[in-house]
Length: 436
Ligand SMILES: Cc1cc2nc3c(=O)[nH]c(=O)nc-3n(C[C@H](O)[C@H](O)[C@H](O)COP(=O)(O)OP(=O)(O)OC[C@H]3O[C@@H](n4cnc5c(N)ncnc54)[C@H](O)[C@@H]3O)c2cc1C
Image (cartoon, rainbow, N blue to C red; front, side, top):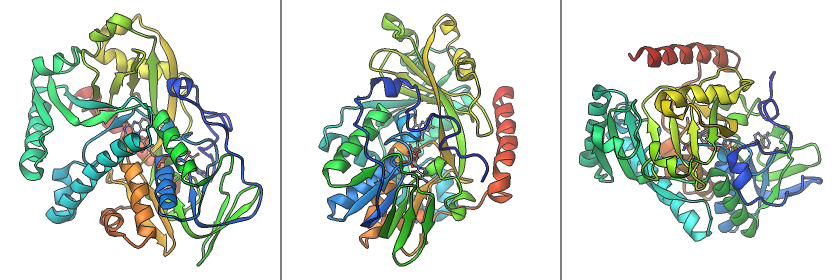
């Protein structure tokens, strides 16, 4: 399969040098798998998807083994922008056209369940991850602002969602004083959090629910069958059910998923603490995401740094200078931060689909997979884990609704998808630059 994203940008068994890894309360290393074991369910991948699936299955009384190639929260779940967004990644008006009114309504309800699930898991398990309400959407032009306001109204009239307030120029500037933004909206139902602390909290909860977690245990081979067999270097797991939760790091483990779910890299940097100067970037503790195709997203850390995500890079290798990759878009939004230093900069691999909707599927009667959250996984991945746990227990309604969403393959299949995507992304990035 060529390059293995599990190891190409990171040191084996280590978290990246992120602000998140520097500030989360670490967990002791879980032992690698060293023998042949049996389980009701074997979950592969310990990000939000796998941790949530394992936790919910164990709570329901099933015997669960969770295999993680690196560390718990090593992947996108430990590196992301921490924004718990409203809705699906694809907007409701697009979904109404794609799947019809009835399923669009169900998908909206599921997305609200996803937000509620994250908030309630944090509360129930006492996860200390600095959860705070509020995400603002920022627009670059009056035209974009008008579209944003119309969409907020659509959510209110069609779906009864009244947590979004339209913001004019002054309203947005009162939250984020960037000369680039002309208005937008504020969604107090959305939230932001410390993503790695959240993942580690889920792992603690899964462990106490009885999940047997193994780190440093990459699944090298998956043999399908009425009982499946998963092989790691040190041992095997034989299980009645399998949950694949590898997202952007899946590699060649399953071709059907690989044809529809494509890994891409994204980057974040943490400035030095800004102290009193935080008001120059964010006057309130609200996260921001803007309308660029290569999206800029940012928020304050609890120690008053700006955590800024953005920047483009195509191909599987991270750029050699991640700081420069992030500094460029950051200075477009905050030109007055020219003198500010970065203390941390890191990258992560997420996964996208053609339609920017997650790909949930039953690969065989007893192998389920969920991935491709397209940059909207804090809520959706956590929820997909719960939906897979429910499907394994025979309640598949939510899982089936999501798995009905069309998921076309990338043109050219796994071999061609990366170069074609690079071309497409370059085109969209060019459009961003030209403002069309
Ligand atoms: C920089 C960045 C910013 C983002 N910002 C946001 C945001 O603000 N809001 C939002 O909602 N989403 C965001 N996302 C997306 C979000 O992080 C993901 O959708 C989500 O974390 C996916 O969770 P997951 O558990 O499916 O995958 P991951 O967290 O990537 O976990 C997959 C795990 O599987 C393991 N694995 C893979 N293959 C194997 C194998 N063969 N054997 C064993 N283990 C294996 C990997 O080591 C990894 O730990 C962002 C992503 C990135 C990278």
